[in-house]
Image (cartoon, rainbow, N blue to C red; front, side, top):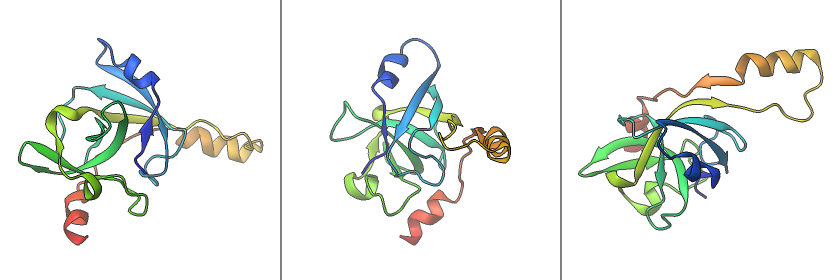
Amino acid sequence: MPEQLSQETERARGALPFGPAEVTGPSMVPTLHHGDVLLVHWGARVRPGDVIVLRHPFQQDLLVVKRAAERRGTGWWVLGDNAFAGGDSTDYGVVPEDLVLGRVRFRYRPPRSGQRSPLAVVRWALSAVRPVLADRSASRRLRAR
């Protein structure tokens, strides 16, 4: 199942270079989780290992988030960080460059409803906002599959 983004993402993508996107689905676990809010740099240059937002090649009204593993011709081979979830280039092949919309810069993980102890709140506060960094080993993982 591809990691889907909320419909508000498309509306927020207007003229601003940065915008929010909310994650639904498990395909980018452990990097991203269901409910995470992303800060996306629309139109940013993509390099191998970056987490990106793209239009699904077969359902172009569906936005997904994946890791750009490597460049292939005029597009990108993309993979989810969760190998068991599917919904990446192993299913639909190379994603054309014009379907890549932007690069994820930060993620915000909202607090869970059960976090009431002071220790849980401190842990959440220390990890709630994190940059989403490129994983340069993505192309090595691709060759290993």
